[in-house]
Length: 207
Image (tube, rainbow, N blue to C red; front, side):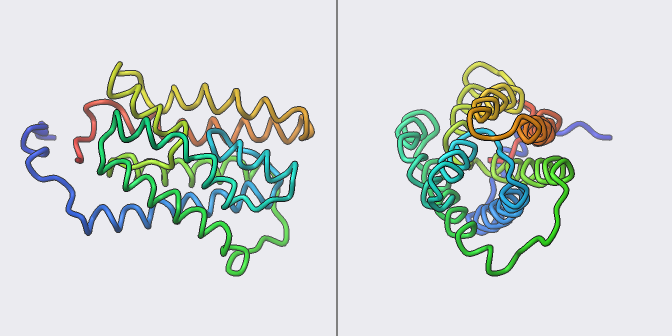
């Protein structure tokens, strides 16, 4: 295959329409992954994992909790990643919060095997994150830190987020049975393998 000129690709950034479409597609994929996790009583990593813990412990809705937990991270996003990234991330977080609140009216599972839910949910969610990352957006929280670390130090966002996600999922042992935690770790690995294989520095030059 012919070599790709990164400078030539950078001269053709994504349009606003492309960014808007990518934001909708990425968040929709992630919302489906969240539905898999929630229906099977599983967890995920990052801010979403913390939101699940609060949801399981208190019964509060996942969407509102997820939105509030992300608020402190916008300062880092604005300082380090720029205004456009921050605005797109804020929009993505708000859209996911709304979708996960409304989604039970459109998507329900009568039976869902937990290990299947973990792996498939992780793959679907990972692809959603990939779409957002390639359009310079995220879902806040650990995603913002992972992108900053990759841009600043060259560490792969997928591997960094995988380590953080597994730590967060392990914290759930105090309120979730160990077998479901193990399934949740499998889901976190599946999610972040998608990112580690497809979101490497220099491989994709979308702006």
